Amino acid sequence: MKHLKHIANWTIWTLVGLYVLLLILVHLPSVQARLGSKVADVLRRKLGTEVSIGRIDVGFLNRLIIDDVLISDTAGCDLLKAGRLTARIELLPLLDGRVAISSAQVFGAHVSVYRTDSLSPMNCQFVFDALSSADSPSQPALDLRINSLIIRHSSVSYDRRDAPPTPGIINPDHIDVSDISAHIVLRALRPDSLNINIKRLAFREQSGLNVQRLALRL
Image 1 (cartoon, rainbow, N blue to C red):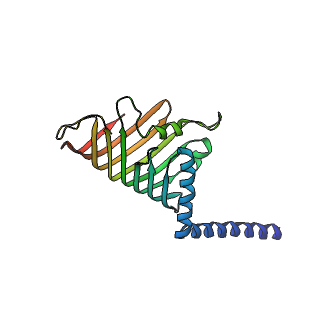
Image 2: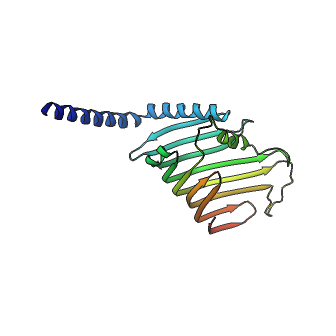
């Protein structure tokens, strides 16, 4: 019995020591930069375009902090730039093929979408194609939930490059939304359903439209 107790104690303290060592390693700047490079390589192969990540910090309680994200489109133009992305991921739903995020924050994100003309695809179409393509028939379908999503100091622009601009007038062919501030609850996102609650959304549009508080459920 004493031998079993000794083995159990040794095993527990070994696992605790390895966990603490792992936490120390992932907080080293060199390890964070290396981890960011590895994840960028995976995304680069998946999307087929240039992707760079400054660093990834794995914090306590399954929290991820990702800094300096850049994703280019197939023409080499910036599609997404983000200063910081953070998320706290729940582990148990992953066993069932579901992604549940208890909280997420997006700071300083800038998305630039465009199309050459009315017949050409948007420059972000390759992202949707890559995410919707299954590597195997057994790959689980998208099942995402975010209990709280906070967005600050972000912007989104869309341009149809062959359409003439209309300064001072809202134009669906030229949209430039800045100063985005939002609190969103994504209850479910699946291939056949969407349940979203936008608790607060504020932004400015280049035409002069200034929305200070918008709320809706879909």
